Length: 608
Ligand code: G6P
Image: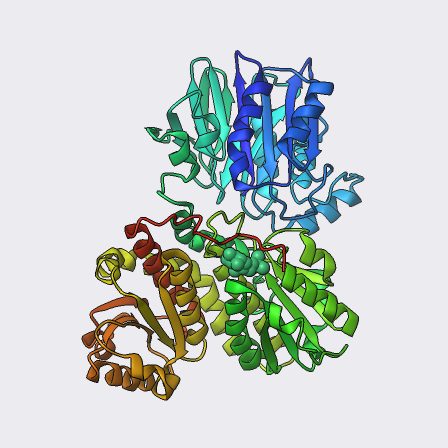
């Protein structure tokens, strides 16, 4: 998520905005910028890279004014660069934006036809042009912003300044957080409380569709129907450390809880209005992956588990034989790969050394290379033919959570798209799968709400020395991911097995000291898994299960059963994994471990 701060008041805006942006830097960003109203004009400075670059630039070439806006950018449209950095200035306006404008291609084309020239690759810049066009007609600041926003579809937290209104800020929100704050003779608009906590503790949270006019002494808010509204003001007691985590004790818990919103972001604009077609970037379409004779996936860690689930999606929906390998193995395996094959590298960071080495190998083999990645323009996307960006925003917890579920959603969209293009997936089935995806954020919220008992179960598991995780089909990689989360966070050994394979070895381990975590929602293999569990039960094993709501049989033989709502089988992995993330989190927390930075682990492994 990009960081936003706007200020109007009696002081110099620049130092306040610089300090505020510094407070937001912990989340990661690729460029930054500040604009102020100065002597009837807009003055703006932007810099690629660290905030220090911007501060140095402003020291050499200062700007001043008592109304201004600032931004730290995390790229979504257009590579990280100075020209893509915010604020975007056009005519009498400067704007900062967080979110995604879905119809920006169309709006940009229309604006170009009317003679507009663009200086960036961003979706944001079109908003500045639209505001200026409306202002030319209406000559009123807030009206111009409101009319421009009627033309855009998508999510935004938007803060605007106008050279003709040097003591005003307009702020608007739709599906991206935006908070207003009032001090003594000064007001603020910000994406995060942290940025302005040093100046005030009184915050007003805008709602979707709201637009506000801020002056040093007043905040006036209007709802989507342009009616004046009062939004409740809250006094926040958090210190800066708590505010950075938005009140959560750890980044990891925050990142687990924000998964429904991140999935919404991943899906935004990618399912078309006919509810059966999928919109991918042109570069992905041009790869014609539908003609591939096989798909080779490589990745590491959690991203590898996403690949293992995706194999089921590609084979089921697109009927393309798919192989998944750990990158560190693949690169030395003398693999068979040809120009007829599609090669998919999955990486949250886009910097993992082993995965990158495999991309170079695929390049030499002439395969078509697609990256599934979270970080725009990182090394792996730059080395690939096209990239599907997951839009999870920066992930700070070392143990990956939201990056994983957004990877799964991205891969599932791609598999459905290939299935439709290859005519291996009937329209009604595609519709059903996409409906499941569209309802996924709600289903995830429902699942998270059902997880209240996890701390109770975690308490009972603190003294275990080893865990066995079981699942079948798509849920076996989810069992592996659950075991990985447990190892990473709690330092307790855990192993995942396909449930049906248990009888070929691990069954010898079963006794009352080995907790068995089984993923057994209602699906085609439910009965089979139930039989495996009877074998565990008969040997005195302790069962902790994830089941569908209303389940009786597995729940009855479980010490604890966590439920997921009734849903299409396709999205079950995305719900079951939430319970496993939370289980590992709570056990680790109770053991007193550093949940966000587990020992010996790194977020981005850039060495072999
Ligand atoms: C490290 C991280 C894991 C991550 C893996 C792959 O081990 O700790 O969370 O899954 O690298 O990283 P990538 O950025 O390539 O997905």
